Length: 93
Image (cartoon, rainbow, N blue to C red; front, side):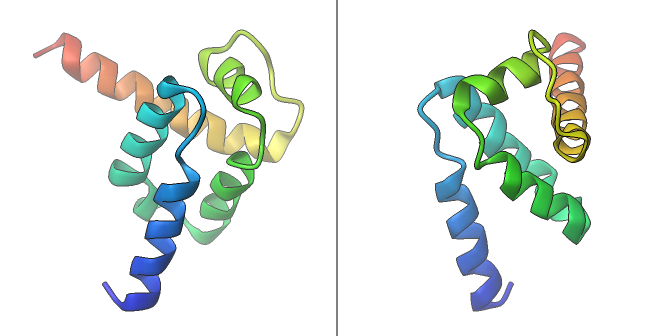
């Protein structure tokens, strides 16, 4: 990992710090496990999602509200799949 990449990841981890513990946990796990596997477009969408309000993001992730931005819906779907996978893995342990 070069210095520029390390700086970008540090900024991303800092940006993932939220006012809601639930989002802190989801985003930190996602960054560690999945972010580096995303293509550049999806990584930019993730950064865009981080610009949204915490309560909206939480509602979109838990399915109580629908996001009207079709682009953001792509990254929301990936995060939700990651959450579902992790929960199923825990249940099967």
